[in-house]
Length: 432
Image (tube, rainbow, N blue to C red; front, side, top):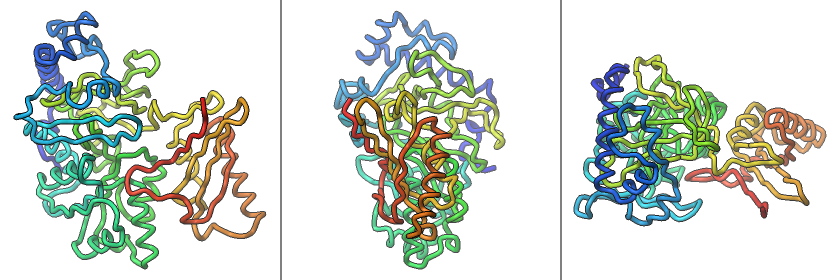
């Protein structure tokens, strides 16, 4: 088993408890003293630093949300001086006003240390060449993987996004062994490779560091079986620093280092804390951030945490597959629908390609959902009877899986939009 920092990664649960409690107490005390925002929120909740005596006492602290970040744009939540800030990043702002994140030198070190451990646990090291196909710039993905890969001694190809044939050329010419990208972009790389007659299965590429958008186990199966690339699920967010964590080689959940973050799962409706194995909204407290502290931040991601020891031997909690987001969850005729559910169901049909699009409209008082489904080249035909039978089969499986009906439109290969960044699967035209 590969470790980057075995003293932390292999620490016992009891020692991790003690370490995490000490970091939590220190975090709360510092922010009560230095941050007008946190001090006021704690006073509003009648909690003071001395009230945090155990790890369970974290529930006494107030939640933080995206609205708090937007209301204090750009830097009113920072607790470091401008002289201590060495870098800024920003969110895309695709769902509203962007958020600005500042970093001290220690924040940059913590970020690369966390993701460096993750990449090492995924089996990467000094013999690897990591092609970073995430965006560089204000988005945190590119530089996050870049510095983490360099930290563990790997060589980095800073390819960024786009220019896909050039990306394939780099894989061939430089012996690239791992690619950091969105899962949808890696699939697109595979499609372009096929078009130009290049077989990724015969290349040196063996690991995909994949994240920044929801994806399913079925999609992972497809990537691994079709491209011969092991799909490692990665996670992070610009508010937290950037990509911070990943699965280990055993691929059974994302390891969330306990000296970096304290994680909780709550009921998104009531805010009450849920237990291990219960699915709800992810809440994260970053224990070592200096410039932009994060305490009990509601991520909006729907997932669950397992606290049992991983088969790799690590005792850090593992975050299971994200099934959607609280704020992009679709409600169709009273039924909760996540795009990842639709994706999972579609990929149980061998004729279905990699791309789909959900279009939601309101007709009269009822919601109407249509799913455009791209077929594989070998499945596309002008035989109407065959297409009708396939459409009915997909519709039936979706209805059974989602408990709500959806119209199916089968479209030719390559006809739906491709994305170099996060895939946009939903077009919601309802006026509610």
